[in-house]
Structure formats: structure tokens, C-alpha cells
Length: 607
Image (cartoon, rainbow, N blue to C red; front, side, top):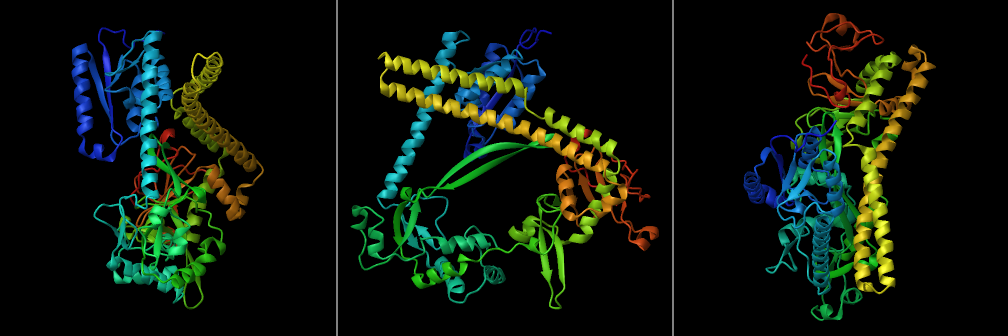
């Protein structure tokens, strides 16, 4: 069936604009300017604009962007002649991604066009644009490298690289390249070292005291987390170093500016390597976009020491505090019982955050176990209004009562699991086999070009400096292609894992009597929950919402009717709030959710 994209009586276009920084996204100036320029071009060329798509605050280093996903969906639906952007790097900053988009859109008869294109559709024109893309990428890399070298040179000269805020207890000088002691805030830091190193107080006790006094963290939060206090104690910026110790760490010209009779703290530059990438996670009918940040500690030889004013914390306090925390580990509540709903299975109905295990022991010696909202319990109480701890045994019993009813109908469960796997396949962007083939072709092209460049260098057609530069570009393209192939491979492995879990679960149910399900250990129940991709939301004054790899979403509430309250039996509610008799082997709620929502949280059912 021939494509009708671009071949109808009217030419249709999608306008695409992107900015990469949060400042641009907030001001909106650059987005407005791009869209206005694209409107003028579309009008002059006689295009009918189907939709204007923007990606505010999105990096071009990845294709995982909400706006770009929208463009790809519109192109796949048909009827699009061209996708317009002001500059080629608005589509992507990686030439390999542009190659992928061009090939993907060509399958639907759609072209990619930028106002700064220099070539045409001929091989020569594509070569021209490709060279421009590589030059732009090279310039961006050189700019980033120059900035990094400038920062390292500044640090070696004994100057601070100013960030969003200085370390607690310090403030920037007038030129923002050095520290000055902020006595008001530094008193809090000295107090922390004294309480840990001299008084031997626990981190929880310190947090409790600061919260009671209303003392705020450097970022304005009420709760002083264990991690924050540990970072203070482990930071060399607060530890006094003698002139002789500093002499071994800095260059002579930096040492010449120091007073031999004073002590100094050490601020480290180039200590960690940070890499931020954006990923998308399927959430029912849509996607959620997240930024992943990986921090890796560099080798000690790469660290650059910058002397800063002495914090005033005695060295013996620092040593004692570090010794006190050396073997101080956060004890897990999980040691006293097995928490079968932990690890993201049960979530808070107020903020959606995962619940964590919480143990309370009263003076009489009795111990109680609860699930509590992580946001409210460990982070910020104001971020979640649901102030409730859910008794662990009761919550786990409610969930298992519902799930065991599902397991007693293996045929329906098989159909639901098959539907979930099919949904995961449909959620894959485009055609994964064709996309994998495109990236495989790209790898083959990179290998072929590498061989050609080496032959040209052997024949003295290019210099070795030119060879080195071109091989560097090819290495970047190779890494991108390998990364995309790994992502596709990982998704296939995830689908294989789903199918394996389905078969394992169904085979185990065949040999298990229905009554024996109630005798399963918490460890086995947790495995079942993982196989079912179970998600539970617990509300303050409402039913539990249970969803997973089954076509119907459940809401469970405790009825106030005499028949239920007299026996304490929990009765699932239908979507009209009526209590109804519950037969686990036959019950199916009237919440007729479509298969596409099998892995999402259904709407809350009122009692």
C-alpha cells in the first residue's frame, strides 16, 4: 500500500523547537523565536501546519524526549510531509541520531528539514550536511574541553570553582573564586563535630535536636539526614591541615600565598565524574521521563587540592567523629522479619512514593511493624499529607487475600499475563528489528570508514593528525550505536524475563492445590508479586488499590456492615461502593479496566 505522506494535494508539516537549559525553558524566549521563524518558513513554502511541538529544557544528547516522542508518533500515524526545525541540532546533537530519525521518517514518506540545511537530497548534499554536523559536534566537544581545562587550570592556581552554593559554613569572596568563613553557619558545623566526636551522640539524636530547635540545613530543609551529617564529617574542607601537609598537595606558586603559621582546609576539585542521561519509563498509557545521574569517584591522582580558610574545627574533633562513624552503619528494619511488600510493591496513596519498613519498640518491650511513606518518614513531612503508618501484618494479609484469588484462576491469569507481554511489545518505540538493523548498519559503516581512513593514511593521502581526528569521530558514532543496540537488547531480555516468569508461575500453580496457597511463605509470596508486577497503593481513609499483570484492577476496603465487621473479614468493593460477598476463586470486580492499564494504578474507588 503506497504511502500518502506528502503526496496529497496539500503539503503538511510539523514544527519542532527545543531548548536545552532550564533558564531558556523558563523564559520561553528561544522557543518563541524558533516557532515564529518556522511559521514564517512554512507559510512561505505553502505548508499546512499540523502541530507545533516543543521540548523545553530537553537535551539534544538523547532521543528520549516527550516532544520528540510526540513527533515520531505523528509521523508514524501518516499524513506528514516534513518535520521542520530551525537548526539541525534541534533534532539531535549526535549525527548518528539524525541518521536514525531520517531513516525512520523516510519509511513514512516524511522528510527532516532544518532552516540551516546546506545540502539537498542528493548524495553530495547529504555529505555536505553530514560534514557540517560533524564539525558542529567537534566544536561543541572542543568548547566543553576548553571549559574543563580552564576550570582545572583555575583550581591548580588555588582558586575555587563556584557552584550554586558554597559548602556549609563558608561564603564566596567578592570575586567568587575563594572561600570566607561564615561564622553564623560555621557554628552549626562545629557543633556537629563536637556532638559526634566528643559527646558521642548518634546521627538520629543530632537530627532530632536540630529539628526541635528549628535549625535548617544549608538547602533550607528541616530534616538533617544521616547522609548530610556524614558528608560534613568526611569533608576535608573542615579538617585543619598544617602548612607542611598543604605543601605536599599544591603547586609552589599557590604555597607562596599561604601563611606558614596557619592551618587550612582542603577543597577538592575533579574528585568525581558525573554523567547525566535521560530515560523514559512506561507508565500505563504514557511515559515518564527521568534524568539519571551517575557519579564515579576518580583516581586520587586526578584530584586537585585548593587551600581554603581554616574552619575552626579542632583536628581531634574531626578524627574522633570519623572514628565514631567508621563502623556506624544504618541498621535495617528488615532483620527482624521478612517484608514481603517492600522494594516498591506498596506505595503511598498521598504522594505515590514507595513505602519503607518501620519498626517501633515500646517501653514494655513489644515491637510493632509498619509500612510508612518514605517521603514523609525520611525526607520532607510537608511533601506528603498522608500521616499514617500501615500495620505490616494487616496490609500484607489484605493484599495476599486478593492475589490468591487471582492465582486460583490460572486460565484467566494466563490470558492476563499474555496481554501484559503483548502490551510491552506494543510500547516499544517503532520497529525494534528495523531499528536494530539500522544501528547494525551504522556499526558496519563505521568499520568500513575506519579501514578506508587507515588506507588513506598509509598512502599519505591524509596526515596522521587528520586520521586521529576522524577516528575519534568514528569512535563516538560507534559508542552511540553500541549504546542503542544494548538498549534494544535489554528490552528484549526484559520481555524474555516476563515470558519466563509467566511460564514459571503457571507451572507452579498447576501442582499447587488452591488451599495450599495460604500456606506459602512470605519469601515465596514476594516472588509471586514480582512475577505479577504487582503494585499496591495505600490510602489514609480509603481502599487499597491493587494492580499488576491482570486485566482488572482491584480496590479493597473494609466494610462497616454487621456481617463483615462481626467476622473482621475484608470485603472488596465494586465500582459503585457496595459491599458484596467475596469468593476468591470466582470474584472479578466490576472495574473493567482495559488491558493497557494493567500495569497502572486504577482510579480510587470511594467507599
